[in-house]
Length: 119
Image 1 (cartoon, rainbow, N blue to C red):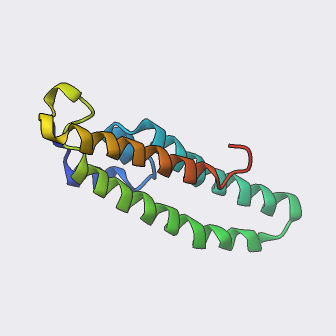
Image 2: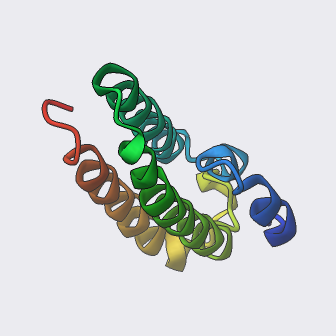
């Protein structure tokens, strides 16, 4: 059993997605990277093209929300994923719980990507 450190997870979570890479959840990391940097580039592009700097205030509202969601998700994953995805280390009675956790992971990714049309 390879338990991940909550302190390292918290420190890496200052950039949404890094803590998820540390925990081994690359798909969730991709979603948080996409949301975080997509909002930065999108609002920056709108402010640049439209010459209205009011769009920058959107960053002040949305980025802390995304960061907080990423932080809570990473800390909860650090609690749940003590096995680091290796099925050989999992006791027989807990294999079903890990399978349901992976199915839940796919649902969260689908919800996260549904924010972006076509993703």
